Image 1 (cartoon, protein in one colour):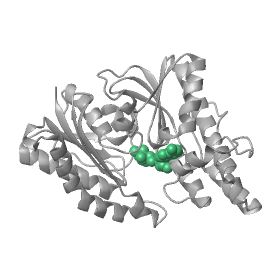
Image 2 (spheres, protein in one colour):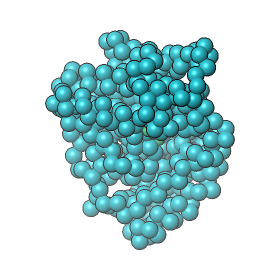
Image 3 (tube, rainbow, N blue to C red):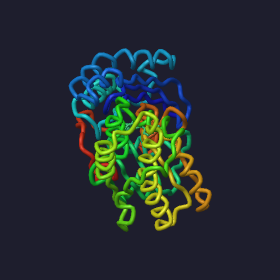
Image 4 (tube, protein in one colour):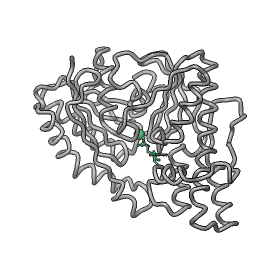
Length: 337
Ligand code: KG4
Ligand code: ZN
């Protein structure tokens, strides 16, 4: 069984993890920069990379100490090398490469989205055939997954990502950044049918998504109606229902059309309580199994990177030490990795 250190710095979480095999967590640390960026209303790349630079060395050190092992006992050092903010990715990948060179260990570059995509199967050696919905702050992607390393992109957002829509609407509602979890919380007390917001592209017949029209609809509504604080829960619930309806309609239709008996939802938005309960209901109705990541592994973390790295290591793959970062999402790179 291999023991891997993974480092994740693609956006505004500085994270490190030590994983043995596919599910023995020796330690894992996530430091969120959200409080630093909230003052700016969103992630500032320069601020993110400086914060990673300050935090990553001691976070890696503490994570190794908590695991009770030294770099010399690792089988490989992995890091997220994209997609993400270039200046943020550079910090984690350079640190991983430095450790790998210093200790004479292999380096493993891992795709952040593959980390999210595999996270619902954390602990398992096998990735079953399934339809995968990755919903994060930066991406909304639907994949036909036939097994580890065999991913076919079915659709993606044409504008805002689902998490981005949550964050932008939260900002419009004065709920701060990042607002997804706050909308989730308020929506629990609200009526999802009170306001009728558009379900963008729900009948488009393809697997692509669009959320910018929904965001605009909420903005126009707020300009016209100046709702009271008491309306906030209903607004959150109605907006959230519009996002979930489209996500789940396409996910379960794709599962039917691909002939899969399993679906998986991952990424920060998969922490959403309504998304999870609606998905659970639909999965039962359709007779498919629903997979989501264990608690704490929905939003960015390094354990999901270590878990993806464990699959690559088992397949005998390592990365060249001069492997570059790849800030932009490229489906071909995900497939080939
Ligand atoms: O996967 P993630 O940590 O980062 C990216 O890779 O982008 O996702 C962060 C996103 C943010 O947009 C955040 O608002 C959203 O996930 N999020 C949620 C919830 N928790 C986090 N959205 C809806 N409901 C939640 N409970
Ligand atoms: Zn992410």
